[in-house]
Every structure is written in structure tokens, then in C-alpha cells.
Image (cartoon, protein in one colour):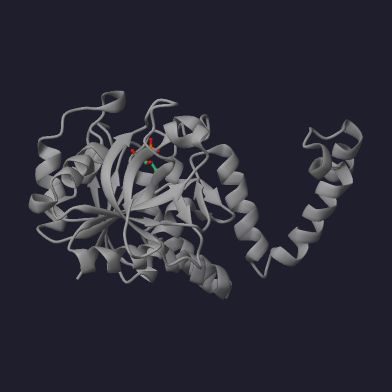
Length: 312
Ligand code: G1P
């Protein structure tokens, strides 16, 4: 039974500077909630209510968000603003949240190893705090089922454009008799263009056996001088008899990296479009905006004239 989730949220967020100078990238709002809250909600929706967040610098913004704020709550209560009160309370009542500091930022593998004392000797899920998976998706549930069936570790895989694979961990795979499940035969972190064994990218959801902690202890710094989770998983994939092997679940749904500016914008548009309080006004505006400016046809920048009409 997998009960615990670990959310590393200690990246430096350099792609989003200066917004991430004083707040972690996982706290950037996607519509009106920090990206991290969507990830916590996904873990809870999957039945994982014991959640450990691995914190980096600017830790207080994250832990404060999931704390109750009595003065704000009593202010909203006095004004009978029930809707806002419910939103504020939700973050602090979501799950059994725990926090640990990463200390020095020595890579994703190092961040995961910081969870050992909390997780103990049981399998657990890892959700990267900046990766958003569409609300309707059941990726993590499927990964847990595969992990339990094979007594193995499981990564989530997304087929990406070969030109993008150098941004991800990349997997060599063998098909299984299930269309969405592969056996991982090798993993390499951010391969150079042209050297990637496939276009299967590892995305930010993992289900790991506790042996990963033993392997991480012996994992030396890899790509970028960091201790890479991908390198530990490569070791586990290469010795299934000892570590139970590694499988991949192929994901074909929507995933956004909220630490990437373009993906962040796309996530906001998709989530807002689907919300009953925003979608009905946003969608006709968006359609006007795109067709009015001819952006769809030209894929170019707007003219100054149309930009003025939008800003009104
Ligand atoms: C991390 C992992 C990488 C994975 C990616 C998914 O990289 O190291 O293997 O493909 O997350 O988002 P990062 O994006 O933190 O550099």
C-alpha cells in the first residue's frame, strides 16, 4: 500500500527570474492558487494524505501557505465572506503536511534522499512541485497500480519532440503486453541532442521503492554536478533482481511545467477556460483576441493598433 507522497520544492526557479527572486517557483499563482497547491491536491485526490514537502530557500512562503491564518479567517468570517473563507481554509486542511529542509541544493536525487527518515522502508510517490497534471488525469493512480502489480518503481513518460529531449531524463524502453506500460532498460539525464536513446521523457511523477534511498547514498554527482534521481533509477533498472526493476507509464494527457514561462501561460489559460467563474467570459475574449489579431493565421506579434483595442 502506498500512503506517502514526497514533493521536492527546492529548485532555484532561475527560468522565472525575477519573479522567483524572493518566492519559490512552486508558489507562482496559476489563476488564483499556487502551482504547489494543485500538486498537493493531486496527491490527496490519489489517496495520499501524508505529504512531505522538501523545502529550499524562501521556505516560509510555502509553509505559511499551508498554515491557518487566524486573523485573515476571522476577518472573512466577520464579513460573512464564506467563499473566500473556504478557499483560505482549504489549503490548511488539505492533508497531513510535513516539511523538511533540503539544506544545500545538491540536486533532485539529494532532495528525495532527504525524505528517508519520514518515509521509512515503504514505497512512496514523488510529485515534482512545478509539474502540473490535468485535473481529470489519473496518471498517478495508474502508476501506483503498476508499481504494486510488479513490485517495482515506476516513472511517468511523455513522448516529446526529439528537439526537447535534452531538457529531461530520457528512457530506453521495452514494450510490455499493456499498451501504456513499458519496462525501462536504461535512463540518462538530459542527454545531448542526437545522443538520446528515445524521445520518452521522464516527467515529474514517480513511484519509488525504498531501496532508492540506499542507491542514492552511493550516487555521485552527475549532470550539472548534481545528485540525479535519474542516475539512481538507472542503477535500479539495471539490476531488477536486487531493486525490483523500473517500469514506465506512458502519459498522453496534459502536463505543464509551471517553471517554464510559456507552459505557465498555457496552464493558466487551460485552467481558467474550464472554470465556471472565468471560462464563459474568457473564452469568447480569447477567441476574439486571436482572430482579431490574425495571430492564428500569422503566428506573429500583434500590431500596435490591435494591442490598444485589447488593453481597453
Ligand atoms: C527533473 C529531472 C528530470 C525530469 C524533469 C521533469 O529535471 O531531473 O529527469 O525529466 O525533472 O520535469 P529538472 O526539470 O528539475 O531540471
